[in-house]
Image (tube, rainbow, N blue to C red):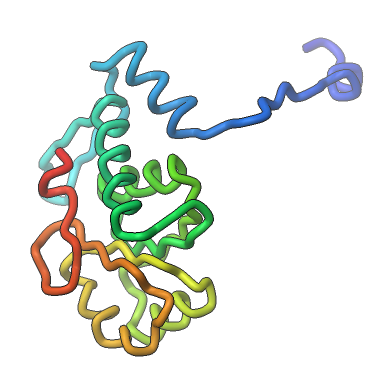
Length: 167
């Protein structure tokens, strides 16, 4: 670029009619380079996990199927209450893939906070881990819009457990 004003005034954004990040980026890279690393994740103890674009593509597709089976549909709000882990990205990608609205929340939310967010957004689903699932259990009677409760790491009564089998 030699002249900012000229570039700015003549710039047009080539916007596609339809765009889905999961399909147009994740799936495209998964197809073109299935072994290409998408993520290197290291926990507090130094344990490393690597995920390829194919891994994330497949996990998000599987989760989409679970969400649909649970009654979540395009336009529904999903409360995502997870820490900084790989599943956060896979859930986010699945939500984008199916056209659901993701409402990320910190694991520091209290039951009262969670109830407020669910009701304010009319959320149909909460996805969290077993350490935080009891927060929703404590206020489920106050959250009539919830169709599905999904936990990522352990079996729990009245919850659907995922990722133990998503790969």
